[in-house]
Length: 170
Image (cartoon, rainbow, N blue to C red):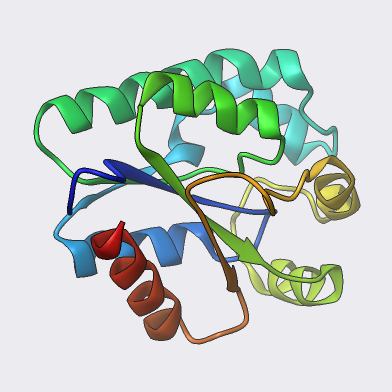
């Protein structure tokens, strides 16, 4: 990758495909995927499992930890690709503060498709009752710098191809 974007965050609402796409981008770019969900606290996971939406306080330490992980990976010469909802602009700004040159791939999807996909997932901690709160919380990154918006209903290979090409050109 060139000097522009040093790391990526694949972002969007629950069940939009963040983890799958982040893994595909990491493979296509010779990078490393960091699964953001693995770093939620036990209390946060229990809240989500119980159908209680996380608030800013729940996410603060999690976002700090993710920013530190990204920064360490970049410092080590890796090309990290983080899967993380990053629903609010202030969450994205917090991650950008930790990693200058951070890019975002926003997986754009509608609520009906998310409900369909979420119903098919097995063993995920996110309660289906939280889907509407994800859309209510989402602040679209439409006019933010360093953001590629992609239709999340495209095939994984097409999304990852677009993202890798965009990252290489940045």
